[in-house]
Length: 312
Ligand code: 13P
Ligand code: SF4
Image (cartoon, rainbow, N blue to C red; front, side):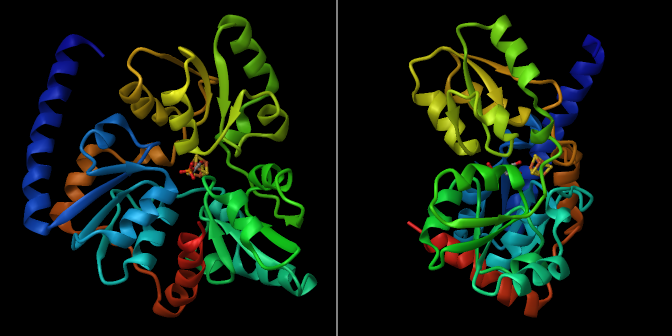
């Protein structure tokens, strides 16, 4: 962008931030932002987090209105956990293709084939699927949740890559759904090899939504929060990062003296990037788009989320 356009954008963002402050007070609203959101949203968030921390925050906040900046299933989870609050999203088109890869009919069919199995569903799923689920998990607690379940047989959905990672850390039999994240699944062995050749002193950290053969190359495997913590606490100064590029905002904030190279230019979730600051302000101005979950679905889905929040 040329200098004048950059200046104009900075001025616009200043005005939007001021308007947002005012609206937040008027509505008693809180802004929750996933680590994959654009920097301009993470900058104004009251709370940044991964899907687990954000679900916890939604369940415990005193605010009347939650503006959930992430993708649709995250806003839905917030509404399920805080049914009396108004949950807004900046743009209802921000979905998660992986969440759409499983539906309640298919899941019911699989349950019928494995009547003794318990269903563990990644939080990246619709409310309808959560309503068919025994317990939810996120990438931050997936292994702990699976091992906490009172059954030797687990139906796991929808992410096959995270499912494969979990299966290496449990003795339980895992029946794994074939879903995947279009963004993380795009990272290849070749991408990582090229980055390692370019940055031989860097450690490679990766999200378990990546392919098993890529995860096997990593110096550290962890959820978004796991990666942030590892990089913050490590004595290493340089990292190749195998997760979504929005994470760079918090990585650089935590460790301004360290260098982060994203493992591929394709590690950008287009769904997360549908949201922007202007849309956050507009959501609070118009109180739209609002998330609704039918009560019968929400009541069933809530059990699966609350069970997850109780796992220590
Ligand atoms: P986290 O569970 O690490 O927040 O990841 C959510 C997600 O959408 C990953 O692609
Ligand atoms: Fe869904 Fe992948 Fe985007 Fe996460 S990064 S929201 S799993 S598409």
